[in-house]
Amino acid sequence: MSIPTSAALSPSLIISELEANPYVLLAFAVPIIVIIAGSLAMTIGKAKARYDAVPTLAQSKEQFKVPASSFNREMKYVEDEDISHFFNAIETDMGKIQDVMKKYERLLKLYKKLDLKSKSISERRAEKAKEKKELVFKDIVEIYRYIEKLKTKGFAYGDKGKQA
Image 1 (cartoon, rainbow, N blue to C red):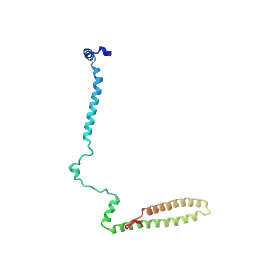
Image 2: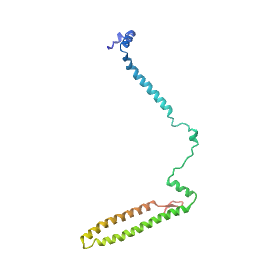
Image 3: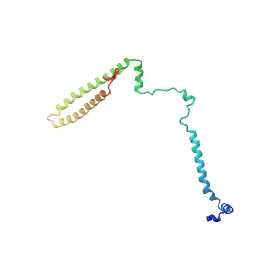
């Protein structure tokens, strides 16, 4: 197909060209149809997505629920002034601390025993004692780290919120 110059463009020539090759019309029609369909889809999608709409009746009757965090659970006991709840928690923590102290004392006793064995005349016995002594020391350090975590956890009491 030859493209006629502007001087040779006449309506009858254009119609005859379209009759000879009707697919030329698609080069103009397809992009226009795609643009119209895209704008309609965006308009319909925008109309459906109303984020700041007035709440429905079911939404307006929905009850607000406080998130179940540890702070909100403890607030119930504070409001009811249920001090026995806190004593139970303190007793539990104190039991854990006593268990840790017993474990520490046992490990310390074992460490001292292994330290004496590491100074033995027998090289084999001294070598095994040194290896076990290092493992026991790692366990003692882990106990110390646990106690440090407990110290930083703290407990607030009174109006001023002093750490006890």
